[in-house]
Image 1 (cartoon, rainbow, N blue to C red):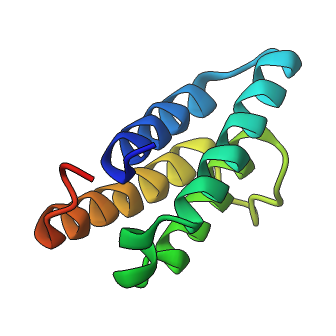
Image 2 (tube, rainbow, N blue to C red; image 1 turned 60 degrees about the vertical axis):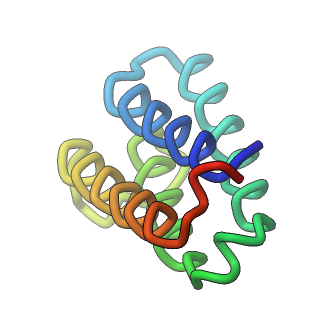
Length: 102
């Protein structure tokens, strides 16, 4: 999957995680998040731009909203803002790197 498409999908997962209420939905979103982050961790553009840390922090926030990570006493709204901010940073870095078509 192209990194920009994957980043867009990660953003969708963040929004869905913020509103998920049913355990099966949360489990599906968790699995999709882990899979997508794993794929992005291996993407050449992500590695070249050193985006492993923001990607991991976005993963933590999304998984915290789903109940699969310790939210450290922060609510879903806070984690959503953090995840979306990190995703925006990754998108901006990829745009600046010319990774739109890759």
